[in-house]
Image 1 (cartoon, rainbow, N blue to C red):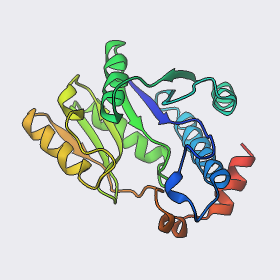
Image 2: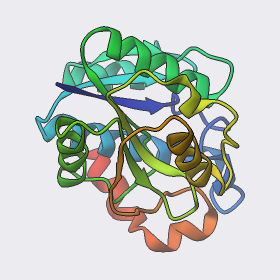
Image 3: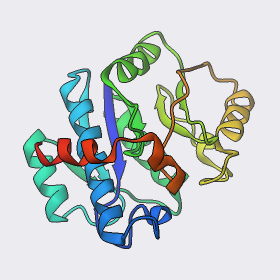
Length: 208
């Protein structure tokens, strides 16, 4: 059975969505981050496909993180590791060690929905070693695993347009089976704001 691991940071101004400034103020960028986090958790928990956990990079005791976890009855865990790849691997290995199949997602993808997560679950159920959700910017918005393979996360140029290609190369090197879902877009840069109904996102998050 799968488990969805939502990777995130606490919504602290000046520490999240920094690439959206100066188009947005640090406070506005943090508000956008929180709205995306709330939406992502709502989609994952509401889909009822798998257990959902919050994996926080900095402060699991943050008040807004705590409130969100309580609202959806989620476990909150701290990411550990030297870089993003190490943190994802550590979380995935811990989940596999509990007999669950990890599906790691971030919170920056407004297009992420229950159908997409369901396709990831079905890919793992069919026995795929790796399920990937490519991002338009060359990264990925989702990775699901049914095997413990640290090399998938080693030597990858995190935060660059090479992430997806380098991950595909790791899959070939490790002789793993894989499936790719549809390519989605991430909200990372100021120009991405034009693709988003920002006022609706913020209004929806305020009602959660």
